[in-house]
Amino acid sequence: MEDLISSSLPGMRDLLPEETGRWQLVEEHARRIFARYGFEEIRTSIIEPTELFARGIGDDTDIVGKEMYTFMDRSKRSVTLRPEATASVVRAYLQNAMYRGGGLTKLYYMGPMFRHEKKQKGRWRQFYQIGAEALGSDHPAVDAEMIEMALWFLQSLGVEARLLLNSVGCRNCRPRYVELLQAELSKSVGALCEDCRRRAATNTLRVFDCKVESCQPHIERLPAITDHLCAECSEHFGKVRAFLDEGAIGYTVVPRLVRGLDYYIRTAFEIVSGELGSQNALAGGGRYDGLSEVLGGPPVHALGFALGLDRLVMILPEEQGAKGQGRPELFLAHMGEAAMKKAAEIARDLRHQGFSCSLDFSAGKLKSQMRMANRLGARYVLIIGEDELARGSASIKNLEDSSQQDIAIPDIAAFLKSHIQGRTA
Ligand SMILES: [Zn+2]
Ligand SMILES: [Zn+2]
Image 1 (cartoon, rainbow, N blue to C red):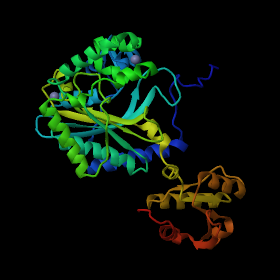
Image 2: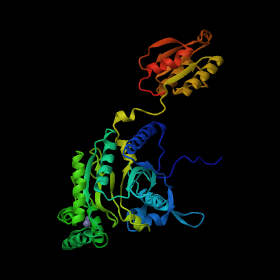
Image 3: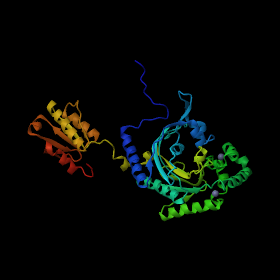
Image 4: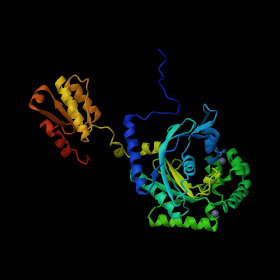
């Protein structure tokens, strides 16, 4: 006998049936809400050429530098498990020439992403994201509509969600702002942490990501990007805010909310939840008009967001979790061989009519079958014995209030239909 392989890789986990009901609920909700806003699902490959992420996310980011699952495949090609999906969606958009028809393309995705992060509580190396991308328009209403959709998705799940908003400028106005930042930072360079000193020279905007306490007073004194936008960026930001105001969508402008990569322009946003604290955004997004060109495509206006499912499922209100999956409407308890066959026949018939039924074929005593019905959370139990079988009837018990009555076997479907409210056949 070989040793039992009894654990998954570090940082990986299984989602068990008692949890997957909540996941399904969130996924179905996303499909419903996103479809209302005209987004269609795209499913890209989970594994991509490493070059896609090296270019699309940036060589000097922690993701690409330290966290990707990268290896040589059997054709000696460097491949990577996707650490996020935006680069893949844009790659698919270009590869399939989805821009050809012109106009706006609205796509959403959901699925696993992979990052070999340092082990910490609540962080998984295989984690799940839901995201959306709108490609082909720079209209500020597109930004506002996507933000509204992301917020409504969360709020309609009963999650408290707040919007943080910023504009990160563009290729015309940002370089001058970065120079200004560098000049300011050079004044206090001795007081900054090592990371900040390095970032000040290489990727200045990322100074705002610093969490080191002693750097904060210096970072807070830095000029705000929103005071240094060009006329076009300023107008775009003003319109995004006006559209949000018209929809009565509240937001806080946070000038520190920046993105480290050059292809991000204008709108940047995060959605945070009180339950998580400000360090832990539930969703993040923004406009990335330059990404297509970075990947070798034509210029494409685009924006998108991604939302962490693992955290969302964790903070989902209790009542949303109660609607577990697979809870049978009817459990069929039986005594004797003939009753078992009849129970299987009734179950088959009811399932074809749209009811969920469970039974235990190896069943022994009625008591143990009732225990199983309770464990599964069944609404009703049908009890069929030899006597009942001879009469063509059975006994049906409501497990919620313990009431019980006799019922003719052909009437079971009608009984369930009238007693289980809100079900659709
Ligand atoms: Zn600008
Ligand atoms: Zn620092």
